[in-house]
Length: 252
Image (cartoon, rainbow, N blue to C red; front, side, top):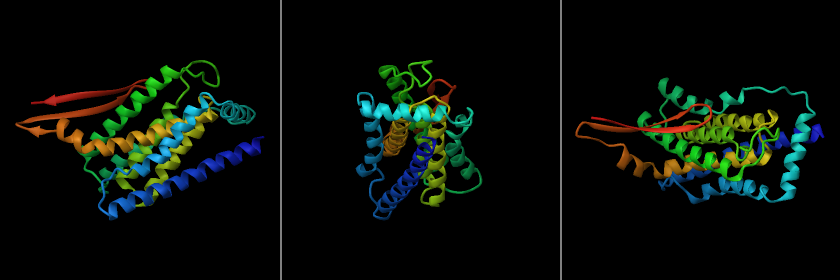
């Protein structure tokens, strides 16, 4: 059983790499053809992830897979770790770190912060509402906030953010971001915090949130981030460990 689970983890990583390749190819075609950056085809993957998660709420076969994986993990000698608390935000740190070292991405620091704020708001509200609406028990049974995985959603939101900003500079940035996100999801299962379907759904929510943020960014920037007559407005995302928050500031 343990070998089967290791094969499954390897498959998840391979699927993640294939996902990265598909994302890079789609975004490159759009860039070369000067199309609108948001392509509806790019919704297929996150929509499939979210659909899988929704199916898991009612399908016994999917839930059986969740439980089999959980039982396999419990038989392993792996000890819990808090590494996933850090891997979920490393892609975002990489975006601002690369900028600090002079590596130019797609947007300037102001615009990318706007996008990060919007994607965080979309992702955070979606995760919070879903957790309370569906009330799935965690594998350990200590709460009813298992579905979907917030850590995984944050990680894939961040990975897509890194991909969008620096994927055209080098595909290695995209690969690193998505591998970190996948690692976060795997660690959430190893830590017995989430079922596989929780993690898959979180990944879909995270990717989709960032894609939407890039799509609507021109409209958000036009109406909420204006610098006229000495007035500057801004949105700032924050996370206190349990809740996502978004503050709106105006300076005159």
